[in-house]
Length: 145
Image (cartoon, rainbow, N blue to C red; front, side):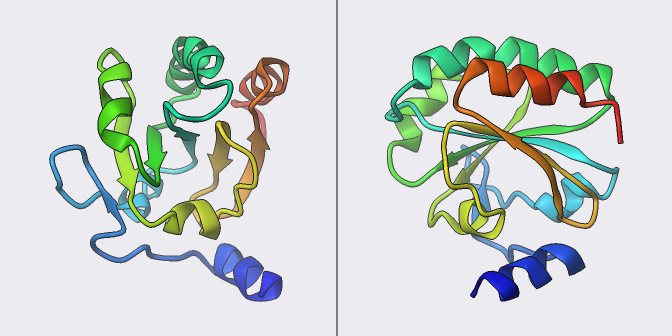
């Protein structure tokens, strides 16, 4: 199973319509986001332990993505997305809901909240979280290859 997941990451992937949606229910495509190049992808939800601490890091994450000229996406996964959206009202990053945890599994996120740098081809260059120090290390290296 791990080998198949790594092959999917190495060759790119498409999530298919309906797996990711905006808060208004419109489809969101990670492929479209990655078409410009690497992207910052944040996995978060309000029910997670450390979610409030991680939410305070969001302005730093947004600023680092902007400095690196990378698009960003906050992915709310599983249940509770409705309550979480209100907490993100001031975010400058696009918000998507991963209703079934499809993207979470495909990118092999094992801890959350988390910040990922995802390459154009779908490979994960870096992953950090939920500790602030880990996240800041990834943010510091954003512009580097």
